[in-house]
Amino acid sequence: MKKYALILALCALLGGPLFAGGQQGSSGAETGKPWEPSRNVDWIVTSSAGGGSDIFTRVISDIMVKEGFSKATIMVTNKTDGGGEVGRAQVANTSSALADHTLLTFNSGDLMPMVKNTPNRIAMFKPIGVLAVDKQLIFINKTSAYKTFQAVIDAVKGGKKVVMGGSKGDDIATYNLLLSEMKWTETQLPYITYDSTNDALTAILGNHVDIVISKPAASAGYVEAGDLLPILALSTERYTGNLSGAPILSELGYKNVEIPVWRGVVGPAAMSAQAQAYWSDILKKVSETQTWKKDYLEKFKLMSDYKTFEEATAYMTKYQADYMAANGIK
Image (cartoon, rainbow, N blue to C red; front, side):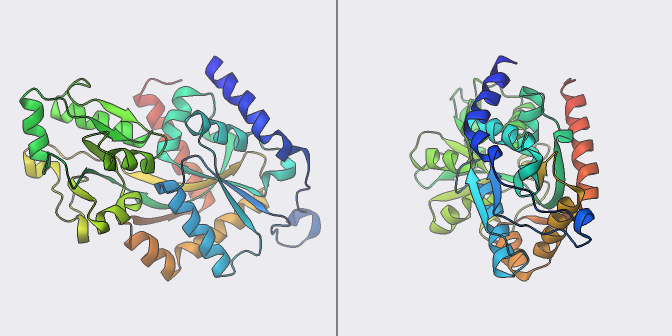
């Protein structure tokens, strides 16, 4: 709780000035007209620039603007302090004056540490929508001593320590599931946690870790350039394209390991129902564009999974309940 109090204190310092001014646009209930933004929109991303969540956010905001779905100016801000908890706490506590013009990129990897380390829960946000499902792979760099995941297995069996890098939340959960299936200890395969997938990729490119866990969105450019090579798909089936060379665990004699990562958007708890419905409809329009399908889903190997704000609310709430029950969190 001391850690969370510090996060809230930092949030007040960082976000206080934002809450002091500005007026929320009139709601549809007040004017009889559909709600729409009346000022700039602050879109918070709780991971570093270049990571999967950042790419997700900027692709959506670009489509919104280019397709004319919203006339508002969207300001994307990366807030990674406290492992992202500062940004999430700031959005959760946004005043009603700014709530309708505040968005937060939110995925299963954000939910896991949030409910584990803070009192924040889904009820402190207004789910707006889910757009896609992501999965992970394990990569090496082009100079690695391990050319395949079988070589990693042989090294660990031979007593060598292999260091893995990755981000938070779902990456850590997948790492723990992998350890369980392989019957390895954290000493045999130690894990270094970075603020974002992009930071983890920078680490492996600099030879600071032996292998790295990453989603296709963040690693695509490095794979295309030949700097990173996929050696294991943490999935129940192989990827296609330039990721098709990575086997799944069942091909190596083990049970497949995967933790699908849903990617969505939420608003503050104080967001009006009119604004929640407005942003949900905008996300639906984005999900139907060819730009989204080709330049995001197809390019970064994600699966389409659009959910309305009603569906997203039920989905995120159930996911939270299942995760808390499985991990003994009350």
